[in-house]
Amino acid sequence: MKNILNADKLHEECGVFGVSVTTTEAAGITYNGLLALQHRGQEGAGIALLHGHIIYTQKNLGLVSEIFKQKIMDTLPSGNMALGHTRYSTTGSNTIQNVQPFVKEYLTGRIAAAHNGNIVNAKEIRQKLEIRGLNFLATSDSEIISSLIAYQTMITGDIKRGVCEAVRELSGAYSILVMSSDNKLVAVRDPHGFRPLCIGENENGMAVASETCALDSCGFKYVRDVEPGEVVVIKNGKIIHNEIIMKCPRKSLCIFEYIYFARPDSVIDGLSVYEARVNMGRVLAKEHEVDADIVCGIPDSGLEPAEGYAMESGLPLMIGFIKNRYIGRSFIYPTQIQRENAVKLKLNPLKVNVAGKRVVLIDDSIVRGTTTAKVISALRSAGAKEIHMRISSPPFRHTCYFGTDIDNEEDLIANKISIDEIRKLIGADSLGFISTDGLKTACEKCKLTFCTGCFDGDYGIKVDSYTKRILEEI
Image (tube, rainbow, N blue to C red):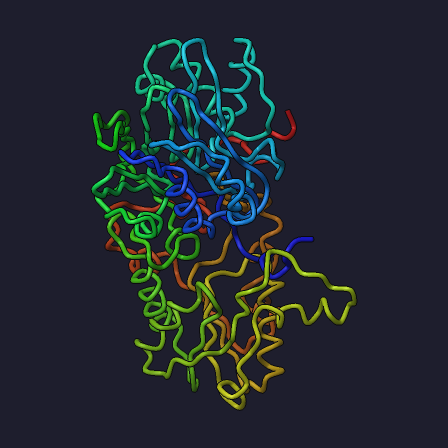
């Protein structure tokens, strides 16, 4: 049973983490890195470990801590290189066959690969590889990427050249880590820079991760981001080669990384996620001022914009909800009444703060409106006099093709009804979304420009008639 409180949120496809060190603790470091990236995917996780010239893998469905219990970690051999992945399924169904990393063999070696993003020409690449005799077990574009890299490595005789040749055939979003049986860790990011990827180092070696919070958690000091279109090769804990292999005039980092996906303690392409979210709140206060008594944020990603709104408006920032942090991924609702009150299992209004108050309530997004309506209803039951909803992202109107689970545009509430009708549906006294220009202003310290396609249809890349269901229809 799915957690209905998360059903009205967008989900990112995954997080990746890789490490090359001079010690033999690569598996444990990777486990800790995946724990730090758990927010990027909760459906499955895996670790691939290099021991000698042999790649060992352990992966399954579930949370990182559920899969890698101590008895499982004890079975993994020692090794100085590993990579890991934590997954949310956008392309490909949630099955064990689609859990990463994918390990692929060729005549002279073996690779393991983990991928964050979405490839829009995956079907065409798969068909070409099938003609060449390659077989596929999964319905994931990540398996296609792994097979393509293995094939090109076999042809070129070198993992770096194999990765370079492979990614030149890809169209879409990808931050990829590849580990080879000849002790090399290769990181590559698409030329648009859709998904983040960063490098850290310590006295024992280097790590590459989707977010800096994972580097911090594992004792690696952030060095820099992998640049869009760059390939980086690491061996024995040091960078032995890096180059820009593809250039694109327009950079298109997914701006939703700052709104919701990333942890607030991460820094992506030069901009603190926390600072960006606070700035969003400041912009919201300028764009949608209202006469109210207090400002409250909906945990978790509404908290920082609420800070910014309070700073800019001068209204006091108060705790509006207490979050139960010990609830797992799914709840049980034996009766209709329990289902209707499900929001209180996770978010319970703090009556002493909200009763009789005019509340500015901040959240990161409204996708379908179901969860927002439940949260507002709970707040009214706690005695809130007025509820003025403010959203730190613009209305979603378009499909995302690059690693976010927005598929059918007809399911998006902003395409069904007007903003005022959304307000009535969720039960708010007023409703305001940040503008796309305001959002860009809030994130202006980022080194890259942004993909805002889910808001305005401007993706910066041709996507034709691709849909994320296409692989499952093959």
